[in-house]
Figure 1 (cartoon, rainbow, N blue to C red):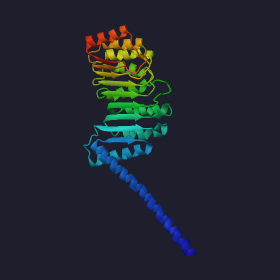
Figure 2: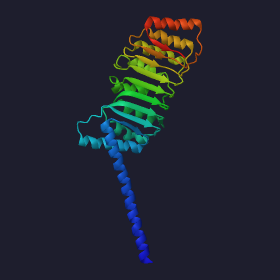
Figure 3: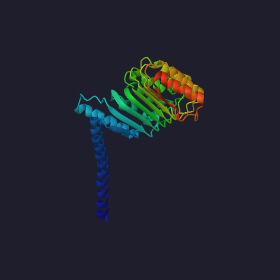
Figure 4: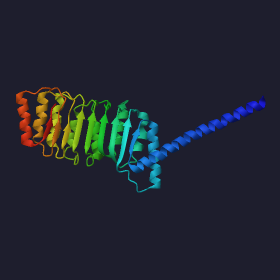
Length: 280
């Protein structure tokens, strides 16, 4: 029986070794796959802290192999992550590998506490982003001011950000406040889309200020919010003063049927400015 037990124990050990080899092999496979995606500027989806670690390892590896590689048109998606302060170094280190992100997509992201929010803020502040998409996320800091995230973004992305698209994410007036404050230096921002973000009349004047002050904005989409006619009118009047705007979408707000006078107001606006406007 003693020989039997020794046989069984030895087979267990070899199984342990092979399972850890499998894990290592799996990691190597993932890194190889990530490296080819990085080289091809493919879309990379991050759903866990482990994904972040692998992304960092892959970029460090690639930089050794191809020191001239700049990762200039990389597209990254963060999906369904609860960011906590335990992510701190991973997030920052992964981001600091890149100079420019062509596309950053934050979907269903929750910041667990104010330090997680600050960490996201700091990571965004040190990278240039061309297209920022935020969807179904809770990006409130403790101070209840989501403009800090946008202001962080402005720090390095002023001359690269072309498109900001935010949907189904509750926003304070801070976003447009930050955009209006920075509109002089946002030299290539062409499109802003904020859909289904529970925006109300109080957002109107901030949006109007931004539209009026931007010299580059061509398209603004504000559909599926809670604007009444007065807010819509305020936004439309500000658009008359824009030197660059070509299209506004205000569909699916609280105004479902327009009176004769309201229709005339919008038709006159279209004729005077040549700007396309959608209200239903």
